[in-house]
Image 1 (cartoon, rainbow, N blue to C red):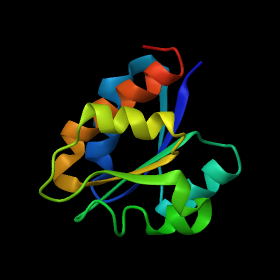
Image 2 (cartoon, rainbow, N blue to C red):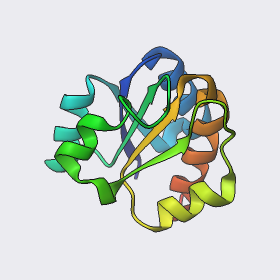
Image 3 (cartoon, helix red, strand yellow):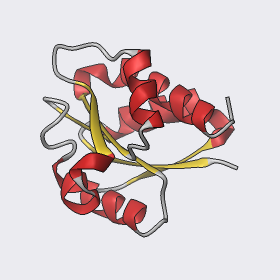
Image 4 (cartoon, rainbow, N blue to C red):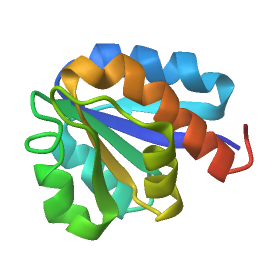
Length: 124
């Protein structure tokens, strides 16, 4: 089993590399637009969305919020903020499926997020 993650937003290549490094063989990664990514989740073709923008909550999540609903989306790291493992694990346990972060926090946020998702799915 592997977790299917779709990536949209800014710095997609940095995000993709971070997801692959953190998840290894347990993740399948698709880089696309935020619109296509959210549709893939809604249609059951992907499990989770990761997106980045300058603020971490605006453009990274606006399309997923519109397609998937506000309650399914969460910001894990805002601009100037640091991600926290316990907060991320709580969001994952609340069954959020779309996660936004500031571009400056990709390298810190993605490993925490992937770790929490692997743990939830019994792959950690």
